[in-house]
Image (cartoon, rainbow, N blue to C red; front, side, top):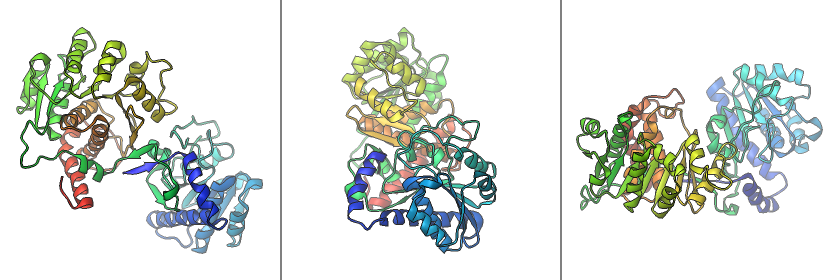
Length: 507
């Protein structure tokens, strides 16, 4: 598990470190780390370092200074560096002097800079830092656009310029070119910022350079689970366990129109190591045919005792769906509410009140989220800030919220937030949410609190998609939800193996 801090928190942590270190030492340490990443990229992408061409797009202030110092270190290693000063009068003086001492080329005219970026092997984005807001300003869009058009990779220094470092949002492109950088990789210093997990598609792989801020950092507002964390939390049966002690999950999903939702959710619960799965709904025959181990019945009242319910996928939003959700919430056990159940919660105040009385996890996408919070005073909008919107909704509704999207955001009513960065687009497919419902429902039945169940389920869900596609971690087109479902056992094995490697222990 690692933390994510806001730029303001990082700035506060830097103050005592700067006070006890020689002037400029922290910047040089960060720049040296950036140069190391740049040299590794040159070796991998251009076959070497000496004689390769690197262009540094240099803005004003400390981010530009990081880029200038990184350019100086690269020049010392035989790289042919060109620094494009976007604000010549405000370039970092010490960094500029260091770069000039190695006879690097300095360019101030954008017309001269365009051919330089087009011929480069690598471009360093040192345009703006984490204090900036809004998109790129001229002439940066033109130069970034020329870089992208030439297919030259960009290494973003600290964060991709133009992307909001707090929320990961990206402004619309302008007539001059892109409003933000899309980096092949990003190197950051001291602490990871929200942009690194909320806009992974803009950051690329993120390298972390430790500059000694750790002891000064406050509690992180966002955490990110890693494989070992998920594996350590995953329920594993012991010698004294049986199907009941491992957790019995009830699935109330599907309809005559959407029987597949019931099959996907029930099957995912089985594969997520639930001790027993009980299905209740009109798709009982289809569920039995696909998963004979599921105990299936037509009505939730006949389902028998469960330790948690997963309700909503394909359920319908009419009176029958509302009655089913009401029965499930009345059972007094943890509830996973997805899809139509989320819409029903948004439409019925009494159901929202019931949901707040039991441990409830809701898993909306953006449209369902809007319906869920529509009746709240000042309903949160996830478009500008998904973390803030999920946190506010969780607090107002008294439930844990898993907001689906390119990066999954999980917020608990007490303010805790997890983010799972998207590693691929394999989950952009119909039915993948039904699979997530089954996984999370199984974890709730096994005794995990909604916040931890949501984080672990999101992680394994994404890992299962990668494994089902056969290309872990590779961005690409979506695949059928049944392939995501099929990847669950291997995904669980990988996180358990990571936990065993980290701790050397079992459960």
